[in-house]
Length: 224
Image (tube, rainbow, N blue to C red; front, side, top):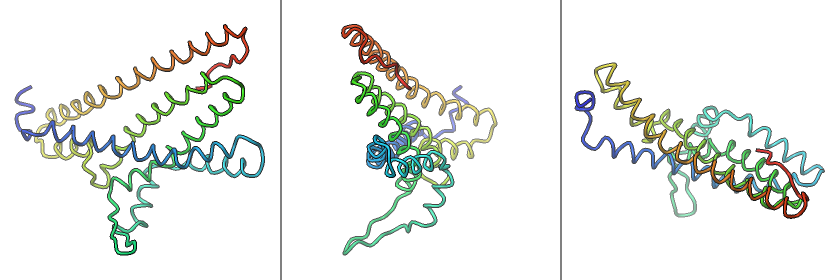
């Protein structure tokens, strides 16, 4: 094992951890944008009408938007610098990737938010709180999807591992690097999903206890 990793730079692990921080940063930006766009879309769909149909059509369009296509489209139409009065704003690769993940994030927030609003109208606030673990799940999906940033040269974890694999002379060494990446991401994601599972079970149990205490009124099974 020492031979496999002996050729790695001394700070390689720190580089990968720094790359994971970039993945998390991208996911946070995409999730914030998802809230900004998704919550109004959810509110627009609560009551039937023309706004609800338009919002539903936009959500359906965002659901079908492929991240890679959106990313390369934005990369080609957004200038690297934007002048605003006397300021020059640089548009980074991280921003481009976060914007490319915005359609998925906004669609997921809109659908989960609409479910939560329906639960509130049915007098089931505890079940509506399942919105929170749903958002957590979306966050971890965004972290995984942020690996697309490697395609445009952003120094996130996948890109760092791929570049080092290109410099590794043996196939076994390359496989070992890929395995290292899988383990690091796996630890983060499994811990996150385990926490989300605990929260979902607690909320589902709280909803059942609340329904039992009120004689079954407001008992609505989770939709997600």
